[in-house]
Image 1 (spheres, rainbow, N blue to C red):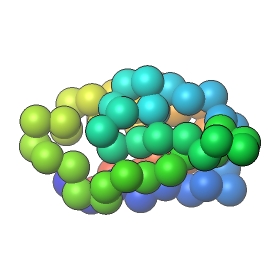
Image 2 (cartoon, one colour):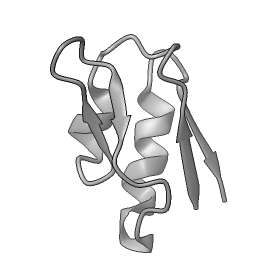
Image 3 (cartoon, rainbow, N blue to C red):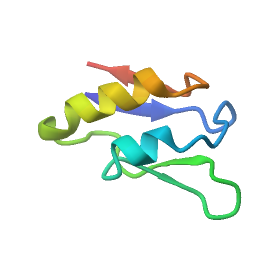
Length: 64
């Protein structure tokens, strides 16, 4: 799985960081998503997929 994010679409809701904290974080100053790894471990795949699904801005993109 390959993960990309569109920081300019992010609305800083924090759903991604709450759902998959090993893959996503948020910038201190404005809460915008920060991608910690673009190739998460297989064990994190379900959490990453869920994070992409619940992102209110559809800013997370996955390539399987």
